[in-house]
Image (cartoon, rainbow, N blue to C red; front, side, top):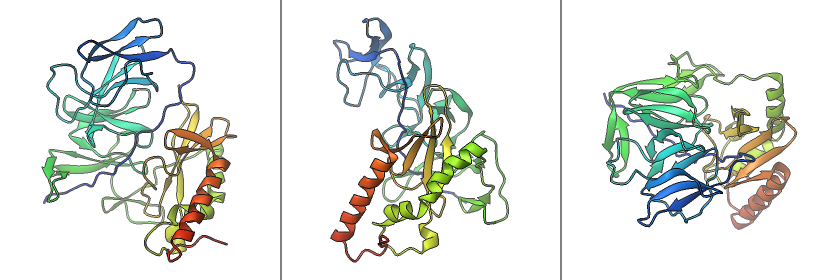
Length: 319
């Protein structure tokens, strides 16, 4: 029997490196792209045919160098898109091809391809899950579905879905996890239930407690424009730490999930950063990090404006 897995669209997470060497993309006369440092030394020769709009001299941002395209005259590999190097010019990996480009970061990691198999790397390009399966979904709430012997097939609306093969579920360590009986704390993945994957120390619990105290307010703001009436239980949000401080990233990242334990919002909606000492809290808003209180004021105003423009909306704000 065929199984079809719906892939969640996720956007890549931001980078917050500090005091890095200045690197710039440059274009050759035949429009191939490479990278130089601030002294003009070539770090990576111009050899890539880039598909995104890139200006000559544009700064390299983030912990790694990304080329949005293949090497000149190279035949694209299956499920591969682009190249990623470290800032010293060493090749790291080829991202998984998704949504007309490189795979997005989800819960701090993204998919990459090697020898036709799919694994995961972190924001620094370090392999965190070895490439061992024919396909793996993005991570959501600590789990990812994988399959072997499966392949892409066009659906009726001309999109593609992964079908066939043998399926399973893995955790953040890449370990296969078996289903358990349904319980209050169990997580549903593809119609089956798995143990809660998140565990925290006391410091991390205190970080999450900040968001729990804001739960009612944040849930109202998140669901104010939802098109169906929701119960109070359905409007409850869940907050989990999906990434911890590491080299080039001095933050805890907190993601928000809805009552189904699905990641809330698109792009950067309701994703937060907490400083390593736990004292500074930011919201991710498009390509910026904004102090939490400033972000909250903006969200409250936008929700109020929506309520005035749509007086019949089903999920009202508290007075």
